[in-house]
Image (cartoon, rainbow, N blue to C red):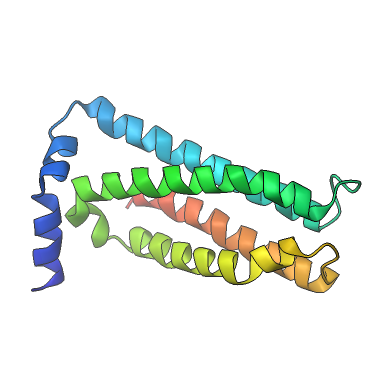
Length: 157
């Protein structure tokens, strides 16, 4: 079975038909949820990053700021992944072959690996190595904002 066959099976599924054949406001609503989820995710990451760089909340322990911000991060991640999956399922053949979509998915995988392999560990430390913290924050934010940029490119390619 080829990739094209798999994409056609997904596109012919009942959930894909329910989304694609519904009112255009369903697709617009999914896009709004996707963007709002991503904004929540980025807001949490920026907050944790600013604390790791000692630019805000210097009197609060890093663990406390991280714990509170992680709630927002995970809510944003769930909203983004669920809404993105539903948008993809509705028209996978439209998205799958676009360079911007491939870039977004590659960056997303890299961001998730970075988030769970390194960023969480650095953020869990009460006194992280400053060079490691700056590097982790910089790379993480570049990758996550790159996902947003690639997502915007999808609509124009």
